[in-house]
Length: 309
Image (cartoon, rainbow, N blue to C red; front, side, top):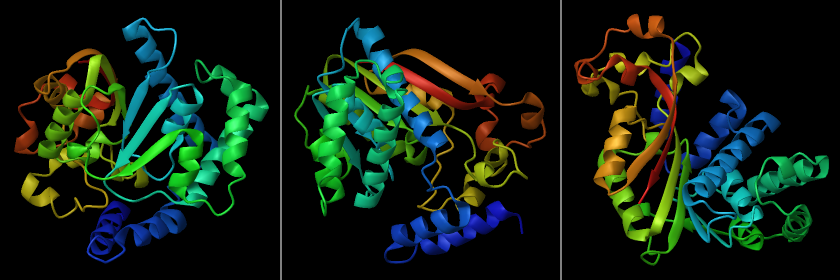
């Protein structure tokens, strides 16, 4: 059995268990290794944070960070929201529907930031960073022995919310920058439409959205015997057997994300697509659901989307 099918079967079984996210974290730590926070992974997320900040500055013609930023999808390691706060954003909120944060992983994130500061490289990675202030902030948080993940983040300047982003409970018109990283592809289309509508309600005048979306088949990241176009071969009735709640993939294409953002009242002003090899796509017998898309659209494996309210 190909390893991606085995992973799908194991995660599918785990998704039915109480405490499924705990068992999934053990699987990813001890089997796939995908939960290990390496320097490369940390640097990649910091570069995402930089992209968000630079896009905000460029679109708004601003010299500083947003007054209030909201990240969708906190995930296992809160690298991006911590980076936004260290770069000077006064109010940073990160919301996730699933409780994945743990104090140990927040501390690991802070340790990585401390090391990047000490090396001098962080100053060039985050626009607006005050190294002295950042060092003091991180040191204060690291000294909080026994603090919860949420308490550690609050010390840095990040408010972690657990809940449904379709009803955030935040004040209307209160957010200047919305960001996400490897998140939108894991949300069902109808739910994503409602989240984007909520972002429209939360948008301050001229608010900016900046999202990095991995449009590829995520099983290919684990199993190199398949390509990142692999899941395009399966009709919905078949794909649902592989598409468990722990590794849900909506299979939306770049044009679908653009359309959803525009329907929510945002104007997409920039896209940065990364496309796969045409010969790999040509070897896929497309399921009927994907035959109406243009070839250029189907070739997109990852993309940035920047939009304004």
